[in-house]
Structure formats: structure tokens, C-alpha cells
Length: 450
Image (spheres, rainbow, N blue to C red):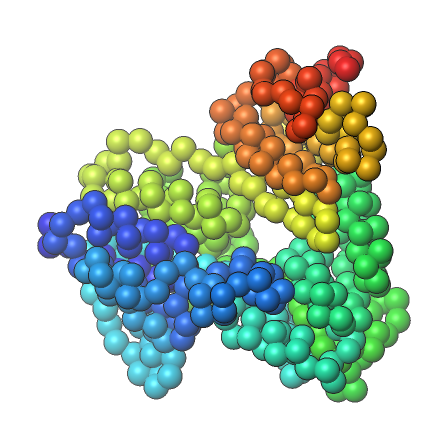
């Protein structure tokens, strides 16, 4: 085929695309350019690393350069893309150690620049005791801090990925404070019935929750300034969101109002032979039927798999079908999964939506309460058609696999009636005669089963 494919970014989509291309086609020149020194660190594995539940930081990765090289591909780290010339089909790569630049030619360019942690635009955000919760280097610094006996009081800003930092700090014996501007954690994803359980779990483990609180600055004498008073901190970990790493593309690639790369239904950008994948794009949401942010390693890999199959077709034989999206939240003994559209996202998409919450024991009533934990199920649905748009599951028992059942239902546009009548296995050792998902759908329909 004698085509040169250049991939920007070695995380999930870049890695998946490179491996898939080398597996599927012959005579391809595939090279990944990665800005960081360490290739393919998994920030989603940071929690386990900080809790000392991995085989080491250098193993918390998607792949190593040697894995790609065995297939005939190449990867160049410390190499940041800084400009694009689509007319000449060249991308400018800067060596982050020497500052030198080179022009790299391509036949096909796959952009997977990813996202960066949001640095709060407030005084003191660049002080040396203020850390960010993303990437290899920050993971190393946070881990060192957790093992430093002089660091006793840690403030985490942001109750998204920040919850992972809070739990790691609790396990390390630190005094943990969580600050978030919302009046309950993860308000955009979960109902208060869910988040109340998480908040209680945190408080039971000694976490000081400062909700409905806005951070306004950090001082040289280690004070976190907020609109509800100052908090003393030996260390601050900011996990207040992400921003697309796309500033270098704004003069050549169409970006949306929030700086994310715009693509068509075939994952093509506005420039010929330039494609985009991953967290720096807004893919098609199946339940919303519109483009929305779906930051997810799984989503990015599905995009890459699709692109590999259709990259060299003059007109792709089918569009990218879209994604459901799913996120996990866990703290202590509580585990939750959210799939598809929460209520707020459904309303943002202009859908006439409602959400039903169902709470019940997971097993029959003859099982003692101490061995029969509660399960929480939320279902967001179209009020007019009963199509299931989103859902969440939560329990102190691991029912996270039920989140995948909801994802399948959402992806195939099933209705409440479909889920209410679906047959599942039954054993009182595990669940009830009517599975809790059946019961949740029946509850949403106004039916009452036992």
C-alpha cells in the first residue's frame, strides 16, 4: 500500500489505531508521535497505583514502544505536535527536550491529542504545593506526597476524578478535605439518592466535605481560599476538569465552541486525509442523537477500531454508529456505574425526558438484611416513546456488570417495556425472581411486582 500514516498521541485511540492498521494492512509506515517522556500512561489506573494495588507505575500503561515495534510500527516520545500544514500534508513536531522542530510528511494523519487537566484560573494555581490529577509525572509526585510523613492535610478540589485522590489519601492515613462547587458530588451524573450514599461513606471514613464551596485562590502560606473561609493544606490536588489539547490546531482544524475537534460521521475533520479520535472530540451519542462529550477509553478504542476498517475507503461504507458512554464511581465499599444520558444531559439534548429511581434489596426477603444489600437503579427515559436514554446502578455489593446491561439496552434503543419483560437468570444466592433491572423498569412504568 506504501502509505505513511502519522498518529498524534499514544493514548488509547492512538495505540488502538496503530495496532489495528499494522494488523489489517501491509506495507504501511505507521508512526506515533507522543509529547510525554513516558509512553501511554493510563491516568484511569492512577487510583490503583496510588493505593499500591499495581505492579508498579511503569506498568500502568496501554502498551510499551516495543509492542508496537514488533509489528513494524514506530513511536517517538518527547515529540509534541505544534502546527499543521494540510496543504503540504505536513505536521510540525517539536522535541520537548531540545526545542528543535521538524516537518513530518503524511498521507493520512490521525489526531489523538487528548485532553489536559484544567488548571484553575485563580491566584496561586502555579504554587509548588498545588498538584494536578492526571498523567505520569503528577502520579509520581502525588505518590511521593502520600508517603511523606510531613504532609498530613490534603485538600482535593473537584469531586469527579478527585474522589480517587481522596480515597488514596484516606488509605495513606492523611486528613482529607474534598471541596466542590456543587451542592452534592457529581450532580451532573447521579441523583441525590445516589450521591447521599457516597457522601455518607466519605464522612464515615473521616473525609471533610466542603460542598457548595468555590475555591478562589491559594496562598504562599498554604491556605486554600474559598467563598466560605480558608482551609489549611500541606498539599492541594486539583481535579476540576479537563480541556482539549487543541490550541495548536485552531487555525487549520474546525473546533467547536469549547475547543474540541469537529468531525463528520466518518471521523473526518474539515481537512482532507486528517481524522480525529478520542477525548479531544465530541462523538455521536446514540441516545441523544447528537454530538456530546464522552470521555472514555472504551469510546476512544471503538472509534479507532472503526477508523482502521474504513481509513482507505474513498467513501466509507458506513458511518460511525455512535457511542453510549459509561463512567464508574467508587469509594470505600460503594460502587456505581452510569451509562448513557443522565437527566441533565437529556434535557441539554432537547429530549422530553424523565428519571425514575428504584431502591430495593438485591435478594429475596427471606435473606437476612446483613447479607442482602440494597441496590439503587436509576433509569432516564424518553417520556413520549419510553426509549431508555440512560441509567445508573449502585450498591455496596458489586453490581457494576448491571451497568453494562443498561449500556446494551441504551445502545440498542430498548424501551422500558423491553427491560421490564426481559428474562434473566434467577438464584436466591444472587438475585430475585424479578431481577432488580426488571423491577426498576416496572417501577418506572407504574407497575408493582414482588
